[in-house]
Image 1 (cartoon, rainbow, N blue to C red):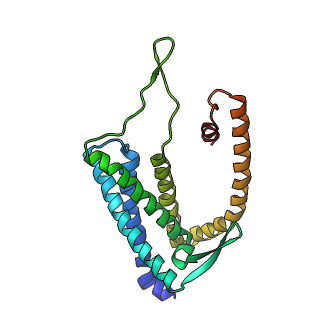
Image 2: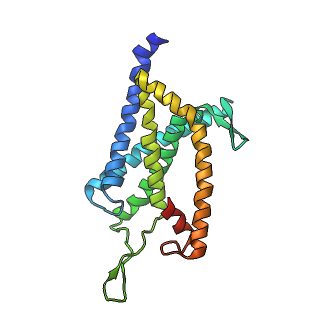
Image 3: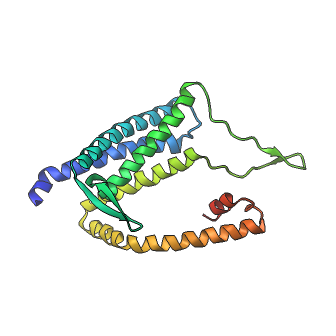
Length: 221
């Protein structure tokens, strides 16, 4: 096994990681370094290239997922004690993160490209005048595209943790963190319930900046 890893496995692994690093670089340039409403040539090219590569990966992974499902190459995964028949490709958390990020990236790229190609630009809400005649800054609005872009960023950068297995010491650290993930998940459940309860209380009190329940939750986050 060590001989196969040294001759073939390591090269294939590094090639896959390098390919996704290219997609991450295009995503970072097109969606983060350049605003999605900016239809400049540089940002548009990066977003289009990232979306095109993501679409190719999405189609390839979808093909293997369907192929494994029909061949019975599945594993029962329990989510909240509910058994779910899952193809083996998605049983790997790194592949699952890649698949989710590719889906989100394709959606984000396909949502922004038509506006720029049509000569449009995402509109920004104007500031409302205040009583004193100045401009009162409005509360930041979060749309669905922003949420999808954020999920894409977390999934794409998070899957790079797999590259740590190249180092023996970092691989051991990654395994330890993976074993602690179940405890972290339970803690996040507790924190989520606590956060929602405080958001509900502040909304009921109509504190400044907490007039709406969804805004209160985002502000506490």
